[in-house]
Image (cartoon, rainbow, N blue to C red; front, side):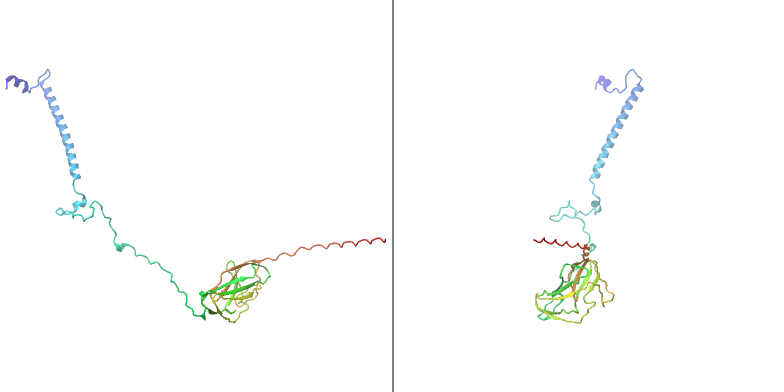
Length: 266
């Protein structure tokens, strides 16, 4: 190493027109700034490294397993990435409710000549006209039909076969058994499809069981006829009681026509 080189390179003493203290302070300030910048860069690098390390740590479920045991291998056909939903215990589900079913009653097996049950008979009422006038005496026909397939017998006498008149609000107004009770029995053998008819007349007056008095006339309106045989009832048959037509007005008598004049003699 030559002395000129030593004088040019290794000379660390500041040179300039200013005092040496100013040059040393400038060097110290530059060195401090450099140290601060290096410290900030090191802190940023440390934070990045710590974040990447924490993302690689096991999850809570994995960390709860014993550190010395490895997770069991998946079964054949099982995807370890798909989680199976938790099924509730079977005993927590409410038991199924049994649906009640109506009991099916088989039709009775009849022999020819047996008593006719209600299921093999049909009753209906017939009015002889759809409309009457207050004061008329309507005639009702009671019809009993064997709708079964076997001949059978049934009492259709006046003691058990009855006609009723009801108002539209289902108020009982009259029955043929109220004021004319009967003990008559009529055992009838019905062939399949055979009918028995009985006719009764209504006077248009109200009645009740045991026929209490006084009886009131039924006014104009719409009413229902019902026929009943024991516990077997017919469908309602409506009919009308109308007000009678007013009498015609009095017409004054006309004067007699004049007699013709006698013809002249000729």
